[in-house]
Image 1 (tube, rainbow, N blue to C red):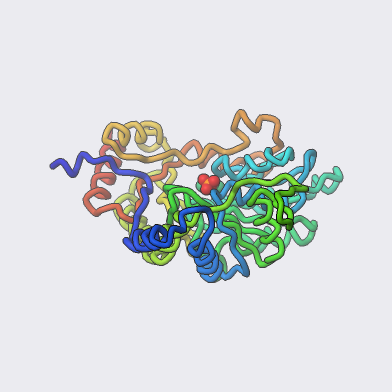
Image 2: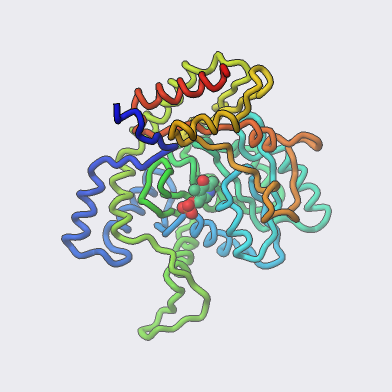
Length: 383
Ligand SMILES: *Cc1c(COP(=O)(O)O)cnc(C)c1O
């Protein structure tokens, strides 16, 4: 069948139908230009969903992080701590500010920032009189980090926390929405995220004045004057009204998308968990993961098959699977950045990178497609 040769994507966009209605409204009222009623509505609805006091719609999650770091006052020469196991977009804005990143390992429970490593890093920073201006904690693959001990350390050392919740929209920690624990939370609506506007982001905070300032910078920092006057450097970072219309339609079906993602995970778990050496990313007891992506590690020893071998088999069958993020402390870009592993001589993220695999996890993945992924995987193991 022609159907079975169609590529299977990692996490493709999944529209509900309402997006078109909202976009049509934007066309009919000619609100095509940046900003407009859908942007306001999207922000309100997003703030309501997350329980944050305010939300600022932006052109990307990266832009949201950049604005958060600037608001916190990160300057050249400052240090910023950041999870090492993440996409480079978590760390690039540190460089935009001319600051120095320090990378913190994962812990095995959630694969997110290790409170143990963070504690060691902060203790040492205090001793050297170089406490960071901010900590960026990343909530990976749909799951929150263990916020309580991390927040406790932030309070003890007086450091501001930013949550990179680009991958964890809809997740909870201790019953509360992911992305609302720090001074700022950032979200992304890039193409493969759990909901998408094709591209876009959101900055949330309980500090609405901070969001107003961020909004000012995001719209070219125009002084309150009739003529065009500027006293500070600004950016063009706002989300357009058309894309906000798409975002509104997507937000309405977020809960359904989470259900589908978790069902995809359950089916993989049933089909694959008896394979020796295979371990799924754990769901930590402190919260709900959305299972944005189904991720697993495979110890190559029992079968002599590596993650690289399996990726190649998937590739031959037009199945888009991915390795786990290459940790930032292993990136040429960050060669000189200090790194704090989970235990002094044990790096968790190095192992997750070496053995980790993300399976196709679209909320619109069909049963047939998923069956094919499972078959290709089990056949690759047997060889
Ligand atoms: C996608 C992503 C971002 C960046 O979001 P953009 O909207 O693409 O700029 C940041 N952090 C993490 C962890 C991400 O996965």
